[in-house]
Image (spheres, rainbow, N blue to C red):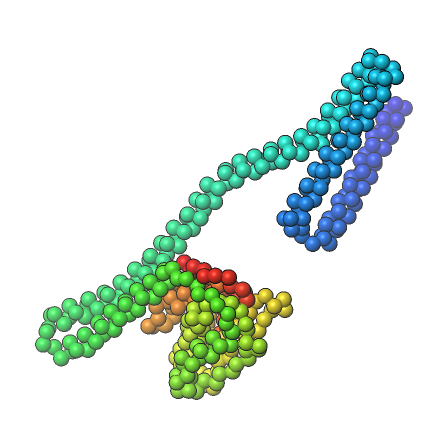
Length: 365
């Protein structure tokens, strides 16, 4: 009988626990739904709510203290010192606890949390620093290997040609050897020039501009070449794309993108070559976007993933720094550059730029 009674109590206790857990889950779900519908509070709003909460706690304690003092004084006048002392002592314990949890505990808890967070940050920072240093070292190794490869090959070729010229100074082929050697050395010079441009820190000269005017200026650079290749250029530049940025550096980016598109169209001998430039703004009016699309041979997926890497190029005479520099300049504006391509159907580059690149000069590092 006793065992049945204990089983029923245990079963009833488990049922109450499940009901309590279910109520807690429902309350938590309602709280999450309510919080999800609220916009994120600003730092000023958070500070205001915290200050208001502290003020309410202090006011509550002050009201408690006034009631405590009033009752103790009344008992002292009516019932004498002993009664007032007993009540003051018993009630005073509760008053002290109220003071601790309302005034002292929040500040103590905040300090303890800050100390714990600082300790955790100090512990994790060396790990993050080592990870970043390792990543930077790997990137530096890859860049150094690319530089060595890009410069060593032309120098080796030029050296071999000069050696052949020295073996037979009177050879009629020496003129051809000399021209090839000069071409290889010119390639080294171009690589170094682009590398210095990639590594150099520059100031962004930010001013008001219209992206349509930058596009027209870049196209004018290739006017004769476009006419020679018979490329049909289509412009859909919307309202002009008013924004703040460095017009000359954005022009350099477009010259590189348009030049690459013309190179691809020329090398592939694309029938009816075309180049399409479209621009617009996002719905919020905070960004300007520009698409540069050609109908050339396109880029294979494995190459597409590497086109912004320094010294990566598919051109026989390219330095592989044009797109890397372009990405660096777009990043300096706080924007982004993305590439997409379907082999055999052309390539597209999408530039996205904030309308407010900065109130003053920014450094391109």
